[in-house]
Length: 146
Image (cartoon, rainbow, N blue to C red; front, top):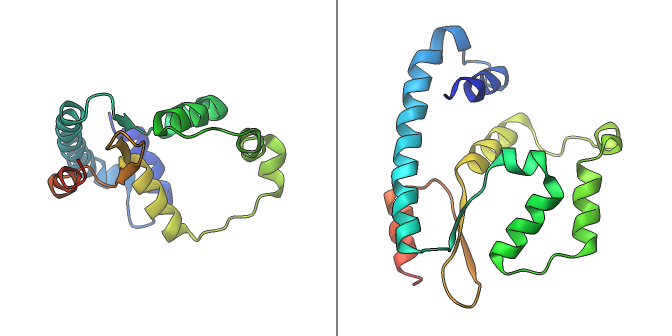
């Protein structure tokens, strides 16, 4: 059900009227998500154990645990400095002193990208490839690195 996502985006996108546009945008969102899921299944079949879906919700509920999970998946060593940085970014004190570093247009792009990115470990040397927007052309790109 994409309504919570669309409600959030309607607060950021001034031209998007949730009550007027929710039906059309829900249908579009579900169609795109269906394509993404189909492509994700294909990638998981093509690269067993080497595809990880990155979800905002997982990082929001356990930032340090999720950072550790992602680093482990990518074959990288996590450091205490990174744990400290994640703790700082997610602490109540950080909210009081952080200043926005991007404008709202950049934020929307980052948010939209974060929802659709996946990491793929494409070879045995733990080199990784990020694919934005799980689509047929991007899936085909992975074939050139295997």
